[in-house]
Amino acid sequence: MTGQAHPVPAWVVHRRSYRDTSLLLELLTRDHGRIGAVARGARGQRSRWRGVLEPFQPVLVNWAGRGELATLTFAEAGGRPLRFPGTRLAGAFYLSELLLRLLRRDDPVPDVFVAYGDALTSLAAADQPEDVPLRLFEKRLLEGLGYGLLLDSTADTGRPVDPGARYRYELEYGPVEADPEAAGLVISGAALLALAREELADEALRGEVQRLMRAAVGLYIGARPLQSRALYASLRRTDLSQEQEP
Image (cartoon, rainbow, N blue to C red; front, side, top):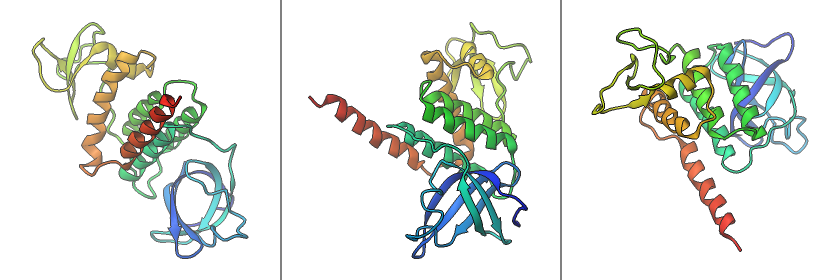
């Protein structure tokens, strides 16, 4: 890992305090993948980077050094700051948590870089239900990592998925036709095709897609609970309590 001749676009995936005035950062870049970096003095009162290295924000960065952690040498805002109202903030944490669990450092996956930026921008814009960008990012992340789901044809026969049929989804294999009494991860053909087309306007279909994606992502993130789900529950309780105030 070495520096670049010119600053490159990145997203601040995660940050935490380090020593007295510094930050430890996880950055996502298009051509260099996920990068761990130290931003020395970034929390100091006179730091030129104060307010720039915020979570889930676009930045332009450069760094130097080799090994597990680089040293940040340049940073500036890379676009308009994004704001995430209510539970959408938990959604942003969720996207980043998935990246930290599944994407190795120094492993560039340009499609994932684009998908992450699209999902954050959509979450902040609040122009569609907040679960839609989460489901699309899960799908695109798995595809980028080589774990993409088979959605438009059956795994056992290769026949096109019928929107009026129901299927049992076998993880790491695909959908197989299900009888009415089938158990397991059962999903409609309509939901599979909606996810394949990335058209998730229908709330009922999104519920089916959520069950499928939770199982598919869970296969790779392991048993350790996601902190973003606890944050979502907390923010949701806050929203409900505010709605009930006279």
